[in-house]
Length: 149
Image (cartoon, rainbow, N blue to C red; front, side, top):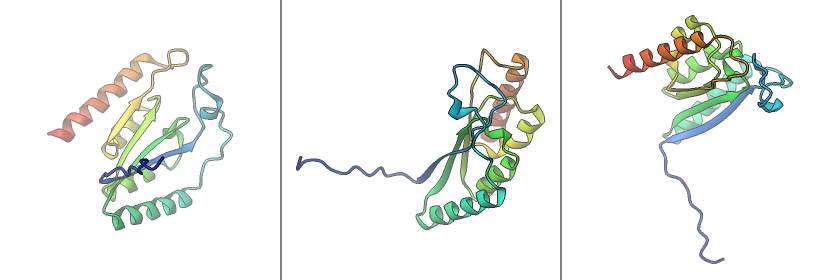
């Protein structure tokens, strides 16, 4: 037991995984109810932005890039999500999300500039429109192409 050492990852990022809500507009039977029951009250925008400001200050003091991954239920259903991801982006942070892609195309067109990464989850049992899912994928691909140009 004397040879056990503490390994501290050396990274330039402060990683936060945040489930803002467990509300979801799909009800897939294979999804755990913790991810879609909606029993966790949506947090107040002011409290979320206050917490974000604290994270931003900490990341700057530690000379780290704030990297926030949002999951949950469906994160894009959070009413203040636009202002949350915009705040992180404006403070040189990175935002990734896990989403079923169900928001309107206009939402994706408006918000992809604030996202560093998106994991789209395809729910075969409950998808509302396969063509919409494909269109969202195209918007994301186009934004990636613009960002790298």
